[in-house]
Amino acid sequence: MITLLDYGAGNVRSVVNAIEKLGGKIKPVTKPSDILDAEKLLFPGVGNYENMIRILTEKNYIAPLREYLKADQPFFGICLGMQALFEGSEEDVSGNESLSMFKGRVNRFKTDLAVPHIGWNGVNLKKDSPVFKDVLPDTKFYFVHSYHIVPEDESVVLTTTNYDYEFVSSVQQGNIIGTQFHPEKSGNAGIKLLENFIYQKDLRAKKAVDIKAKGLSKRIIACLDVRTNDQGDLVVTKGDQYDVRDEGNVRNLGKPVELAKRYYEEGADEITFLNITGFRDFPLKDMPMIKVLEQTSKNVFVPLTIGGGIRDYTDSNGKTYTALDVASRYFRSGADKISIGSDAVDIAEQYLKTGKKTGKSSIEEISRVYGNQAVVISVDPKRVYVNSPDDAKKHHVIKTQFPGPNNEAYCWYQCTVQGGRKTRDLDAVALAKACQELGAGEILLNCIDKDGTNSGFDLELINAVRNAVCIPVIASSGAGCEDHFFQVFEKTSAQAALAAGIFHRKEVPIQNVKNYLLERNIEVRSTI
Ligand code: 1PR
Figure (cartoon, rainbow, N blue to C red):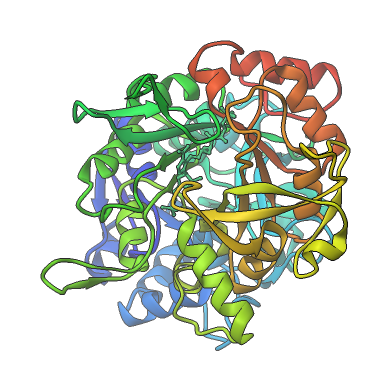
């Protein structure tokens, strides 16, 4: 019996699914005394530190948690659930009192590398802990965070991880364990860790060790564009430059839940669902997408992103739902990140016009509650060719190696909304920068000209956006063979590459992409 401390901010469904898959039973904490009654306590924390401490305080959980920890009862804190063990965080401007079990604080990454630190990274093991029993030394785990702990007492360090510098990625003292990474999102290795926590009788580490690991991987993401076809079935489809119809019919490349499971088993590092007609309908009415997430998260233990239709909405009865309501529903259904497309363009335009943050946009509200790392901006740009930068003075113009139809030597990338149906007077670089300032944590960078063409990623676009922001960029659109992934990682600093068509049509297995990259010394997570 595992007692689960869910304070209501974030995706705990994956943790629950993982425990249940392992044969464990979950008892949720509903009142302070449940904490003291726990045999083993699991505390997954996602989102914003200040928000977490505020809720723990309001619910009167701080005192019983301290008592439980002081008694050295089995405890597993994940991400914020581990950070809460320390004395406070830079993320908490109000300076609330934390659990203060361990001396030390939580600081923001100080690095020129992309923050949040998102992706699969190795852990250098410092203690021979039963929690790591049968977990291979060169395993990678999934991280997603902008802050890391800085313990004062080195003896609590269980693992460290390298991201520009070495930071502490997990701690253990007696039966109290905390990881910065997410075991519930770390595939088989993470599930093994949770299994050890559940079933090992004695969790205490026996001796010190010093096992070194490799660094952060480039991520390979499988993307599923989902919509209802003319027969009313929810299908995975794929467009040619966003046109998903073939001889008038919506292409049907499979069922979302089945395909997602297949990609997980084949080694995808993340899975993204895009509800491509979400801009038309209210997504909370579109229950199939919620079911897709719920069912997928039962068997898929890597991060799940969902996009399409995330915006404020007023229904026919005049009831208003905020984008935060929509996102919350998706997080509760198993999503780890939400992706905003059309609404981000409106928000950025408004922000660039007024120069003011309203605090009320979907980007700001969702990142405030769930953290920046949970907010992805999906950009759908098209090339606009010009003869000279003077022809598009307002925009970020680049000199292109691929001149336009009339031999134009320059281009800029025009943002579109509603799946490329409407264009706006805003360029992709300006959009990405504005969204980063408003609190977005990652950019999913599509390119309509390249999408579905199998001709390779638009490296010029990726470099332009990547050089303008410090949040991670996912390169998307155009992958046609293994070498295109190598090119994108060799010639740009994109942190991840996403593909759809080649995976759906089984033209290139995910593992072939990874092998190809490994042979060329690009760090990726190997799943064999
Ligand atoms: O605007 O917030 O409702 O979100 C709608 C979302 O749906 C956006 O993320 C937008 O990119 C996406 N979308 C809308 N229409 C289409 C379409 O194809 N007709 N799909 C669409 C965009 C982009 C990728 C694609 C990759 C890789 N698809 O997911 O699958 O580019 O493709 P490839 O490897 O086959 O080249 P909102």
